[in-house]
Amino acid sequence: MSIEVALRTELRKVSLFPEQVDTLGLHDSLFVSGILDSLGLVWLISLIEQEFHLSIPLEEVSLDQFGTLAEIIAFIEQNEERDHI
Picture 1 (cartoon, rainbow, N blue to C red):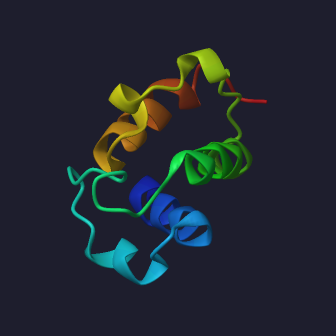
Picture 2 (tube, rainbow, N blue to C red):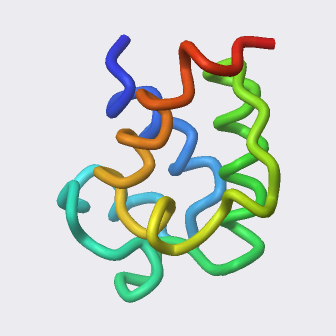
């Protein structure tokens, strides 16, 4: 399963509007679109850690890295090899 597909699956679990996750563009803001709020982001990070076997320190979390699907995918790709649990 690709990172994008797995991420969309996890995003549906925490999204305010899960029915909109499939139509969300890679570069659309998760927050401006209303897909996520701050609590949803915390849940999503937890699910990403479980799904991709990553440890994500909260100090590394910012809208620059978790604001869009494309940014989250890039973050996961950069950290997959670095931080397997």
